[in-house]
Length: 72
Image (cartoon, rainbow, N blue to C red; front, side, top):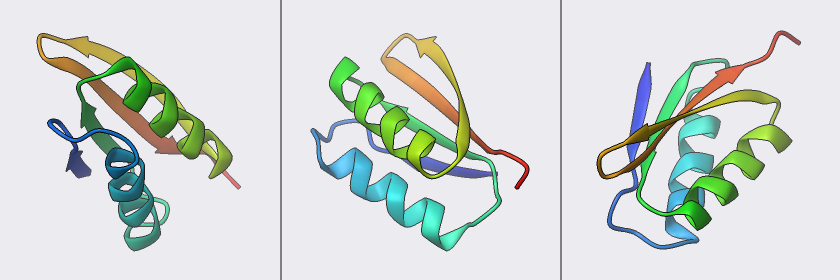
């Protein structure tokens, strides 16, 4: 599994980091760590547009977003 730590960055950096991870690891589950609601929403929107299912987990310092590629 691939993990992207985008904590400490404001958008668009978390989206850009997530997009690069998706492109470099097609069909792999990816976990993205973000701190803000805006980053969570934007990363979620990107992943959905790329065909990933999303599961968001609240953490002490933000969110852990689990992206799973859907069967194509």
